[in-house]
Picture: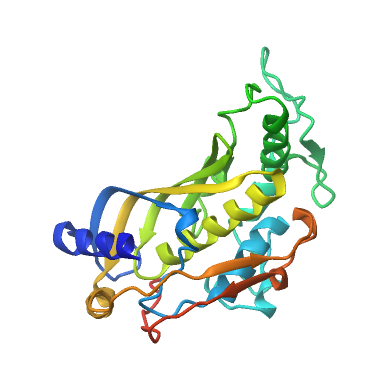
Length: 287
């Protein structure tokens, strides 16, 4: 994907060296934005080998709403470095996607009576299912294009009190869906983006999620847009990315999703078709 190569070039040329908590400095830029048309193919990088199944398993872990990685660990180790010995995480994206905590009682004038609120079976706390809210809203838009929730399909993985203390608060912390005609678009906001390792996974993950939700609700996949607030390249990734820039992108692959309801899909129901790539490039993870 040339769009990705353009981003790498931009940060290499314009990035400012910054120290950070990992001990490995970065070349960092502020406020990078790009978007891709999902009709042009599935945006999985071809100039290095991508581990597609790990990404798919991670997405379905998000959708499970689990606050631990015990089931995910059976399929991929990508979250092991941030969990405790029991597989628990201080911050788990899906926990907030599917079970965002809401107050037991609001202040005067506030309304906390949404039909998407339920009692969490594990904690006994009131929680809000943001993914179900999006699905139901999109179905309503099909019937009533001027529904009140047309521009309110926001999913947040950011809880300020949790993020202030978490070992790794959400990087891709909020996304919003948008309907244009018969197309479903998605915009992701990311506070911190590791361009060599994280961004290709984020792009592939949210493009797949948008496609899955579009199909479930009767829309066509539209555009995926992405704003990265701190877009950076770790110094130990520079040589690998320069090598990657010398490679010419290959045609984009397709994804085939089994004809099942959204809540019955599993990682095995998502198949990658016609994927051609160069060999992998090893990039160390900064923890």
